[in-house]
Image (tube, rainbow over all chains, first blue to last red):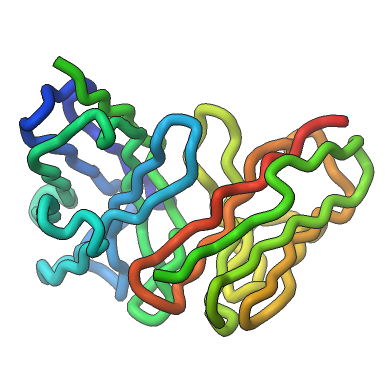
Length: 121
Length: 107
């Protein structure tokens, strides 16, 4: 059973960089044809896909956030990470990591529990 | 970007009754549609992919139908654990997008 767990600071100051890590267990991040995504949910709102990474390092980002996002992977630690720069209060959300099924069907079959990040001074 | 619109926003249903949730895409997504269930304080869970294929371990009372721009999630007989928020998600075009959700609450 694949499990994903997000970790990182729960509070970030405006204009700083939000940094989160997702640790994958129960399977290798390098196996199969899986892609690995970040998704966020603003308080009381719906879901917004942020971007994905493949274990080779190939990335694809949501154009609405592209200029501020970096997603990276560390296969030796079975982790992938999100950096979101120049944050504002509008970036306050629960951030989830998730696994995309494969390159032809990007639905999310496993999700982490999510971590709340608040942007505030 | 494809906009996904779900209706109704809230659905009040009694246990044992049938629930029908709708999802509409702003342009065709073929059958590249998934449904996810989210309970308070929990991560979403995949229910349906390919518009009508149940994910592993999902009970048969959940069924999905539709293609193109109109989709339906049906819960044939609601059980207590089914009261939650349901999101549709298209994966036909980039960026991936979700509907705003339908909350299924106890009547």
